[in-house]
Length: 303
Ligand SMILES: C[S@@+](CC[C@H](N)C(=O)[O-])C[C@H]1O[C@@H](n2cnc3c(N)ncnc32)[C@H](O)[C@@H]1O
Image 1 (cartoon, rainbow, N blue to C red):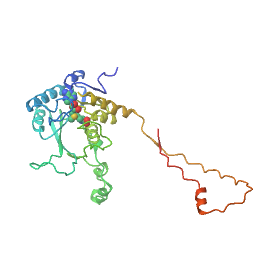
Image 2 (image 1 turned 45 degrees about the vertical axis):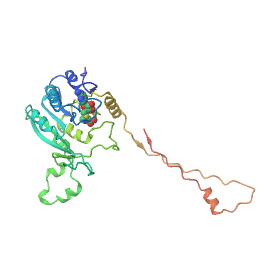
Image 3 (image 1 turned 180 degrees about the horizontal axis):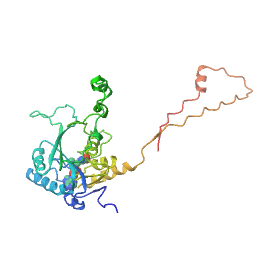
Image 4 (image 1 turned 180 degrees about the vertical axis):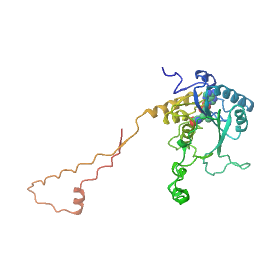
């Protein structure tokens, strides 16, 4: 029998929902909680007093950590506003491996005049034990042809790293999902799949399970599914839950294959009509009118 909680996003409060999950069953907690910056998620989760926010954060962390396997990991999205406090909280319970800076590639336009505009999110990467799962090879970035050429001198020959690609490092420049982005769903703080999939591939084994307590538009579930991992999570807002359902269902659709239009058969030449009338003079206008019109451009068919 498959586990009832696996590959499901429950439309409920994460704190109560966590009781569904057996302790020690999760490989990766990958979560993007409210940052407490006053956003409207259709609930008050991002509009708490600082004390309430930090108390609540500690509460869900303590409820979530027992679900993790001993060699499991945790990634948490934050901003500079509360990452110092929350990192300290986590460092008392786990080992911090990285602070990853997500540079959202915000274009330079106006912004604050009394401080520097903030254009990054802060991501903490934590583990429980030294033998934590980590597959760097799954997320290496290929060198471009120019770099490879530049390093083709004999001292680099046989350099394995040149072939396998480089470590993505801890500064990730990935564009945020602006309104016109094809990936964009109707959620104010949706994260790009590129980032979430990198975390899943690096820190969740292929047969593993990813937990996200705050699914939003479901990016973690989508990423897990696309990478062949299992998932479980929660989301309070029913409108966002509907978006998650839609996004997950879209993954089950057969891929859109563009069919080449079938080659057109050359039109059979019409036999000249035997006519008793005298042949008409072919003016240039008439010649043009007699030419077959090009067929209207056909759209390729999607199946
Ligand atoms: C920062 S957003 C997550 C965005 C998500 N990573 C994405 O890519 O779409 C945080 C989400 O947590 C949800 N949330 C807040 N409190 C919650 C709770 N107690 N239980 C479950 N979800 C909650 C909010 O409704 C919001 O959609």
